[in-house]
Image (cartoon, rainbow, N blue to C red; front, side):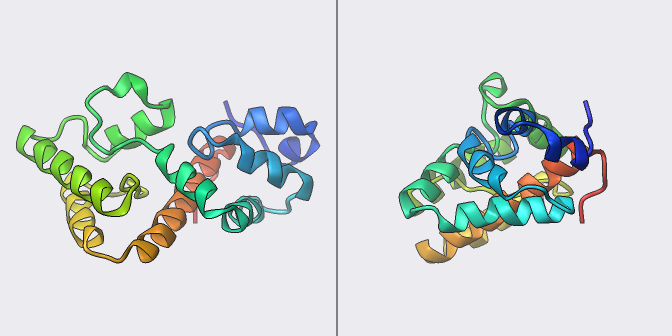
Length: 171
């Protein structure tokens, strides 16, 4: 189902939030807080507003947002949101060779241990190998750098999901 930005802007706040459910993984509070800033002139303005909510959230809220995202290569796809399932399939993570999945799970565990939250990356346009390479690099970064990177990646994911909902190509 696609919708226009004008239609989204015209919805009552609760319906606006419902229409954008899943834009931010299990975190509708972001869209709810941004709804008061309507109308949005462009999809980018909507994403900027929601990312503003994220940036102004407490560190605990930001970490909870990151932790709402699934581990990449999750063995039980049925536990993921539909959007996450599609994104992981599109990146080839569902059909990746067992050795790649094993390596991904090992790196995911090391990343979570080091940073305290799951590795988050906008996987659209990436292959499993590219994801593994990015994970290996980001694993070594300082925690504050990774917190900021994870939030930026979440913004990219939201922009991709919004573009799909609006049926427009993302920037």
